[in-house]
Amino acid sequence: MKSLTPLLAAATCLLQTVSAGSVFAHVVVGNTGAHDTAAWSTDIKLAQGVGIDAFVLNMGYPDSNIPTQVANAFAAAAGTGFKLFLAFDYLGGGSVWPAGTAAADPPDSVVSYLLKYKDNAAYFHYNNAPFVSTFEGKDNTADWAPNGPIRSKVGAIHFVPNWNSIGQEKIGAQLDNMEGFFSWDMWPLGGTNQTDAVDESWKAATPGKTYMMGVSPWFFHSASGGEDWVWRGDSLWADRWAQTLDVKPDFVQIVTWNDFGESSYIGPVANTADVAAGSLEYVQNMPHDSWRDFLPYYIAAYKGTPLTPTKDQMQYWYRTAPVTAGSTCGVVGNSAGNGQTTTTPDKILEDGVFLSALLTSAAQVQVQIGGGQAVTFQGAAGINHWSVPFNGQTGEPKFSVLRGGNVVNSGTGAAITAETSLADGCANYNAWVGSF
Image (cartoon, rainbow, N blue to C red; front, top):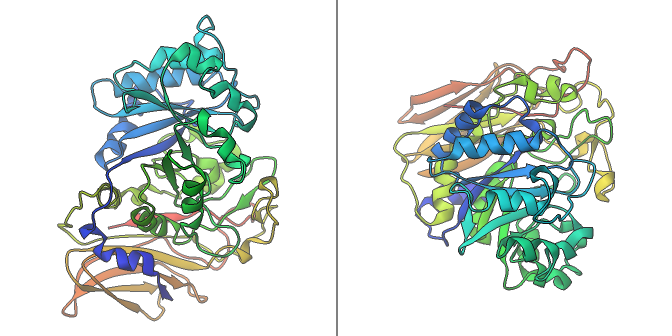
């Protein structure tokens, strides 16, 4: 067992003051094919209710789903105060985005999409300019140049691309083409926990530019028909929010709201038609909604407007079987496609229960897996985080908050089993998330 110091220290984070910013959630528009305006409205209300400022509408090219669903999203956001902005995905659709001209049809280009939506009342602006991002696009940087085809038609923008593949040693040559930088380096390599060193180094490599920091809870790329892999999640959700207080980014992007095929979703699985068929078995009965529960406190602390907890809460997450319970079914640890040396998933993931407690005052926090020995932690007022290893134990984990020897609140999680629960014998590296 262990207590992770970044979030244990963050028991006092609600008293800290950091620079104000904005928090966004990454929405894969390609995973919203079953959405209508009502479904978008539900997503917006859920996000807005926990303090998220805007959805990042990630759009692959080509994708016939995009025009309808972007229109639905803006219709749903109208009059709510919630914002949206466009992120052009240069890898997600199989082709790169054409820069376009003002005369292009609306679905066809960067220019046509920006001209259609940049002045919409629900579009997110920063420094009086529409905010725009990308996923990659390193071979199309000239399209975004000061006198390039996009800005010459669209005018002023606040452009914050994700161009990680250019590398820190070469990104300096692109500074004139951007107003900010968004790093996709939010998951650790190998069996170590993520630090904020990579964020600090990207900030140093892009001086004078705004910085958007990625915060993600998990990563398991499943059933793609190509390379499938895991990166270490474990305590990542707690660690990254603590790190926002040190990095002090201008913006935070939660990755993701709905990428079910990569197991990083914090939004609801409201319609299984939005989940790719190959990933469905890994997503079913694996809710992640409880990861949103502490967001009002995390976001308020990041923005320098801390909240005082009014009730004791806990959130907890874990895989429901040991990492070696079941076949890997081709899943590896790390990603060759991302230039990494691959290994086996058991070298990446901990067999553990990860738990955070938001306490109104000092209390004991107790975890008991099945009929095993209960483990007790001393929690301070604010947000605390720990983990407890499986150690061969199975059964339902029970989580309790105690004061003066009395249980003041408790909850029970999904059972941990000795073997995989999937019918095909594959191991499920996705997380089950619960709370009280």
